[in-house]
Length: 114
Length: 113
Image (cartoon, rainbow over all chains, first blue to last red; front, top):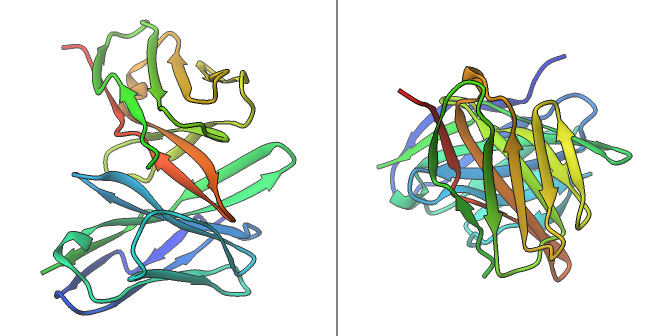
């Protein structure tokens, strides 16, 4: 079974640009969530999508947005990049069956903003 | 806003020792999650807790959802070298129509020199 795939793996952008990251979940998983990880702020939750709808949302400004397609693939977009957006962006796909939740993270996209 | 205090920040373990870490908050959470992250890897979900007072085990790991819904702890029994890594707690709460997930800063487990 293929794992969670994130593309690209590495990215360099300059301030003011925008970026789109992609996440393909494990087959059959309908929930995709996104996270930002930095040395200073640690792990932070961005948002979660389920069946193409944003179900939960973290405390990030509107420059951070996402969407989910009918095949459960998800994208997140960051507009007007700032230096502080440099981070590892992780996505995870989840499956809830009864009271059991399984969640798997992708390898992440490392974004550097110059 | 909601904040989680995770302690200890770091600890050294010797093989065979039991390990305990916890997360506390002044806010109430609906779900507690515990993750482990190895260097260069994404986090791995270890245990999910959904009800106040719930005690759940996953092999040598045991976690509890505090009865006040403001805290959770994770115990590792008979630690082994592969337990080394960073452990994160996370609390999920509903705020209006959507929920949010807050992470602790992590507990770094290292092998005692």
